Image (cartoon, rainbow, N blue to C red; front, side, top):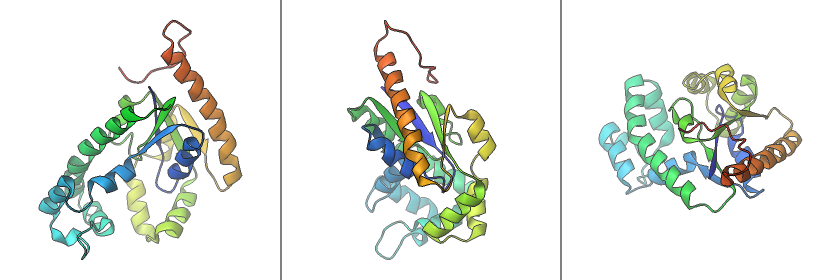
Length: 213
């Protein structure tokens, strides 16, 4: 199955783009949703987080307080490394498991930290959703109400916009014109369908530049 890694900086519009691909029949696995699923009350992953960071990262109802945990780990690089070691392996395993179950011509894996976690080797192509950094900040403030300083710390923890664009195979420009998104998605959808068909026919012309070994 053709796997497309969809990535982008915070506030770039990854979920919106993934929804547009899903509406065209693509399979979609969103790692942010998997992270929430894996950290629900009573799950082994949440138990490990509590053991590592204490009950102060919980809400009164026992759910994970993501804002509090985010503040804690972004203030301490070592703590962030410990959290990533707890979260990334089970998310990766569940992502691949869910992708393998999908009946679709190709699958979009939404991985915000794709390059940062070295997961580009898992996919056949990388699709970056791009917008100017001031647009990212504006969207995140509107959506989450985070202060600019915290947004800046999150953005600094991700690869730069320039590096992301340089390493991507495909790019969707998601500035402030939502009407410009569907045509871009449609063009790539048709391209991915053709690539998936080519990969499924080993006797035909091979046009997929595969990243995976």
